[in-house]
Image (cartoon, rainbow over the protein chains, first blue to last red):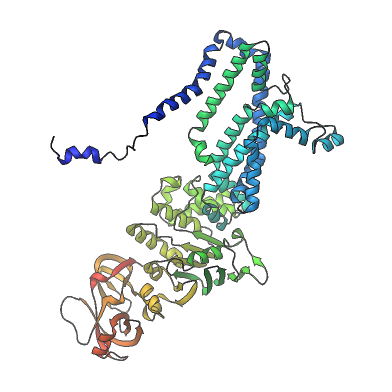
Length: 278
Length: 348
């Protein structure tokens, strides 16, 4: 073949194909994929599909499902009410106080949930820092109640929402708010009509992440709220109880439910959460 | 309605110290990048704290001695920046109605006023569109409508045309011109384009390194720039008149041939270096030849600016050598020639 311009063209026109990585990376990468998917496949293979409708309708599963959905949703509302304002303020806070607040908010993110549950007991338990005086004054107590489940879940889920909101507010163009203020919008109007719509995707992504995190919460819930059917036994707790109790098939059904919800969450977020969290 | 402003701001490497007192009309602020023009806009809008006193239409916006610093929403201002910055989640109509709604107007009045201003800027048909679907020129027209709708005492335009391509820029400038001229309030137009300043402004402030170099009418600025810098920046000849094909007729009856055909009121601008001075009537290509009297001779560094009086007052830049060779001095009668191809025409 002659070295005509046409025969050179493909070589020149292929810079969008990056330099290949060493082939040795492929084997460990394949192991990682198998490692992550095999357990899911194993569960799906063992799910008792024939008795699935009956088991989904049983009191044990239904109580756990209703309680889980209710508590996770309530925890998400709590996170939105306090987390959106915190996310906005952190996005604006520079300097030492801001860094400190940001570090404190992220601690629950990396702390083992069981530790969170223990800490919650010492703060809001009957003899706790805040829980003690409140119990003495009102007789109200959080641990081992449905409200306690919401508190435990909100504690674990809140950082996800805060970080998501902070990220989207930080990346939004502040000049929109300036133009709005110059057009006569008071600070609350600027927040309501400019900032929140601009941050909408981050708030939604954060809420979905927080909800998913709350739904799967185990360690803090069992430590702070215990595991009582219909009151504090959420889906993960029920699955664990079934697995080590009498009924492995119920455990598989509950696991399937949680997998379906996780996949749904992943679908709802699509590529969005990465942008919101960066 | 007047603007009486002293913007004073000191930073490590940067000081802005500008006193501007103007009656209603358009004040253009020109100067190089980093001269403090945008800082001035932000300070006047209340978006930037500073240590000066600002009073607009008899209301005190900033007064350091009294500790006054009105928040942006308490000032009667509007801002248009280089980027239109239309709220992406609102329709065009909702964007323009944003100001009146925020000032607690009723929804119906706000919508009526917004429609009115969209129509005035020629974009009424876009009212239900989202900002993301607009062209640059359309978006900037909507942004101007949004800023003009409430009739703010102080309208701040920071490089409003500089993101637009040449043709669009010409059209938007033409269409916004008489709305700015008719306004009761003060308009501050920050620009680096002398044509913006000379065609839209009643007064031009030249700013350099945070300080005011000269504040004058466009005509006087072109004719007697105080520094070589001003001469270079805005020292353009400016001729207003009525276009008749490819010539322009001024109010005094002088006729200027241009290279482009236009209609209606126009403003022709050309550099003083495009004006040649002859002692006798020149023959040949320049069709624009005017008899004139030397009015002023100002040395600006390497060149000399000659102010010429006559039916068409002009500024001409010539070399010091030419001045001595021709013996130019005030009172002399000379001939001035302008090349038609050097003349830029903008809608007036």
